[in-house]
Image (cartoon, rainbow, N blue to C red; front, side, top):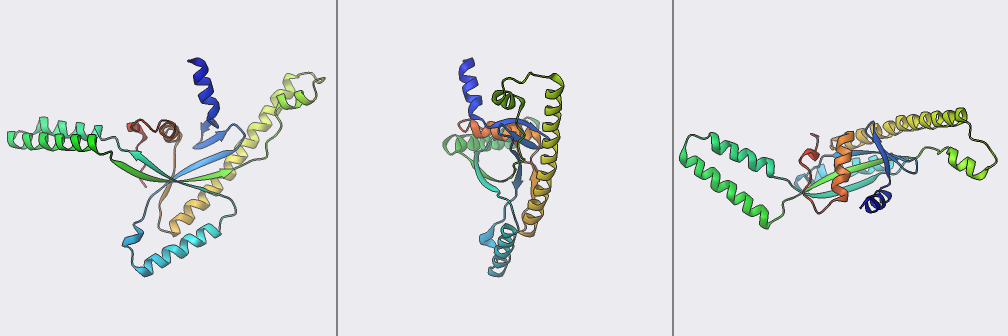
Length: 219
């Protein structure tokens, strides 16, 4: 079992999550934006033209790649059903209690036969800092060098400083993307650490209903 867990972890490219940032095993950095939607088909022809041009300008203004993800997820309605049950218990009218109970049974049966799906839109913004060679790499090429604790500490501090600088530059890119999406009429928010963890839990466990805490932030 331990070996299976280790093998599964090897497939995940993420080393750490902190400061709203995914830190990859190869040194790359990523931040994830959750983006609201717009019903393009309901817009007038003139409005559609404005949105299209704004989107083209947004993409043309980027000097770095982005990744757009459309994630379909199975809704967890357990909390909603629990709310209905609570209303039923507090309802003094027996007739309304029966109606709430019938409605809850209908919803429960409908969801059992028909998976309720919701689409969420994400934009992934990358940054790839220049990776400094690690101590193991250097010692591997030059095995005659002795390990010095002071040198190792300096290398780790330099690596951490470089990572912090990379996160700062990544945030600048994210700000540019958020402002660019705003010109298209789309609101975007950066996912927090816990939201990132839960998002990837759901990515790697698609057969399960999404965890209740992984609810989308308000955008």
